[in-house]
Length: 241
Image 1 (cartoon, rainbow, N blue to C red):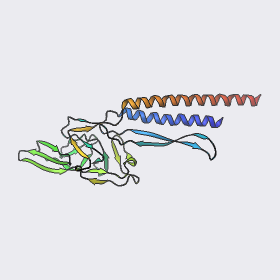
Image 2 (tube, one colour):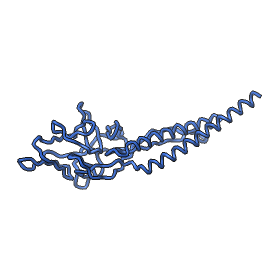
Image 3 (cartoon, rainbow, N blue to C red):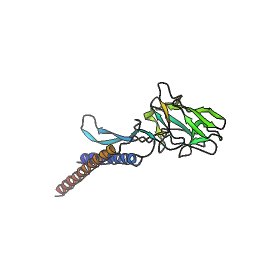
Image 4 (cartoon, helix red, strand yellow):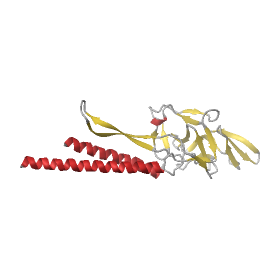
């Protein structure tokens, strides 16, 4: 009966983690470039015995691409295909993101909502407008005509599923993901879509259905805990009698 109690209780803990992950996905369903996560679990079992319970393996990010939609920002862009924008904070630390919602700062750099600047790009102060080609080439128009001022390079990883989330839409490289490899977009690889943003890859309908299933599983495990506890109570009473 102790095993039954533990199995049901571990199931409750697993479903609570599952609910937390789904809730976070839903909370960020409208965030550009956000990637949803999924919790994974394994069965606890002793050699030659049936399952003893459930243990969480953690959560992993799902990097399937979200839908691209038209954007209104002057420097908004999206990646059509694999890869990440490389952004750098004021301490020189690199992060990787699919969120292409940038704006021009006073120093001419393109920065995201967290203040991280896009790698190796600066828009001159005399620029009246800018354009980014599919191959990442950045050109600006000014009173002196149009000229190229840089090129956006994208980061690719051997195992992007092992990137570490550092909050929101940003990730850091890990030993398991491998180092970032910078590549030029275009040709047969990913393309940069200027004037567009990648929406979150979270499906609200699917997430709600998963939440309902997790809630039902949690309730079933809770009933299992109650049943095991009641059986323990009866067994204790019999022993005393």
